[in-house]
Length: 350
Image (tube, rainbow, N blue to C red; front, side):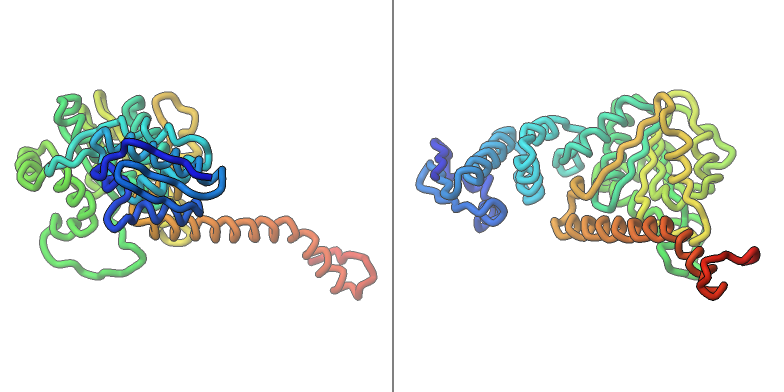
């Protein structure tokens, strides 16, 4: 079968095919079709189903490009995944949601359906939990929403915080004053703000106290009114710290709590405050939970494959544990039978 797209200029073809036809090759590889171009015509050769899907992928990418959106490999892969579910229209819906621009003029938008729901939840609720693996844009999108609210005078200040806990390492003594000691833990938040606001604007607002980046311990005893507050790496809070943080919220404030439940750096016997909050606060009005998955990873495609591989491994491990727990009573009865010489009677004392 051959599917044909007519009237596609060379410039538009280049936009959707990428450098050295990288995106076209990805479509060909995924759907097992062949894409051939001749002047302003694109032909797709292959079996009926894959050809029709490839045409829908190209039409969606052309529509994105016509809006002025830069086509990336993430766009291509995500469109391919949605076309398989007959939901490629969601790509255009997601792309229409512009949050703000970076200091260099690059638009910041949600890139997946899950991210779009997350952003909508932030708009519509006072407290939002953004939960998901690395690379799903939890913190970056929350930061963009905070900067937008600040610039629109919806809040008077931005407060960014995270628990100062080492990622599985013991760093020992850190030199400098208190701020210099905690800065390494807060560096990811600084980096995101620099990219969105620019270093000069960030520094100026920070000196005025309108932007505050501080460890979670600094939040105790405060009431935070008219502020956009982001708690990052919430999986590393204790239940007491999470309760302390959530009860700091004052009037006119909005809170986003982000975390990855698979990357805890707490001691093995310590329960995560994020896990407890998900159970305790579920169903409370004006509190929303957005759970992002490997499908929402927007970093390098390899990161998405890594996240998916770990999700499968963890699910398999959890399944084995559940299976063992179900068989444990039978295992214990078998041991008791063996201790009594296999006569089928159980001793009164284990």
